[in-house]
Image (cartoon, rainbow, N blue to C red; front, top):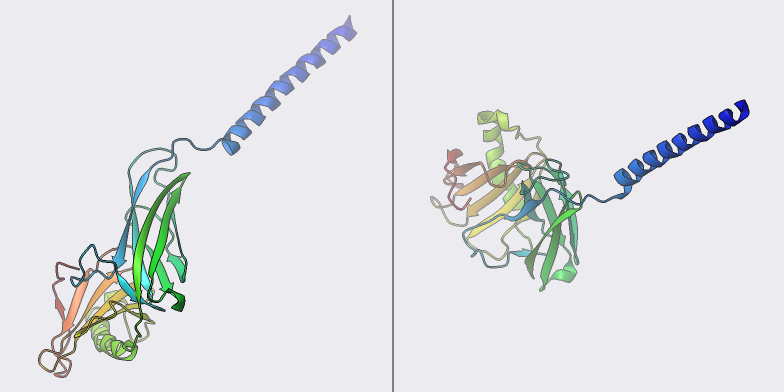
Length: 260
């Protein structure tokens, strides 16, 4: 009798263990294998930089080979589900160009930068860039086109001269910006093919500086810069002008135009 009771207890314990193991295995399988069926949705917006009043909104932006073409990406929550509040992963691809993403994991209020550098094989073609936002099984995709012109960048030295006319003044009058003579910049032409008013863009670790200047004689030879904090803003937040370069006038603050 005692032997039978012992066997029964062993069988009961074994049955309990089987149930426990099956339960644990089921929980593990569900949490690791079952896909998220209700991901939080979001919308994604792609903004080209720079936007100028010289191009209609329906026109394809123009660039040249080796230019750094920058698109800003922002997201907005549109539904509450799995992943709500988490960062959205931004990626991008293009055939005929080198593509990189700065600040690729963003939440609402943050900005990712997609940099596209077309190669020479893209000249005289339309380059298509595919930009994806992914989170918890939900994907948002946008495509943008660039027309690649047969043009050369011969403005880099003059653009750097224009930029550096503002830097000492900014360092003295706006030290909170952290822009000094030691700030390192990466430059690129923008809006190639446009004459009379020249356009160039510079990037430091923290700032985007959009430089424009008027190819005219004094007193109409102005130059202007527009500053955008990278990764937090999609538009320039301040602007400065030298009213006459040949007249060696001091920089001064100006209001941001509506198109900026």
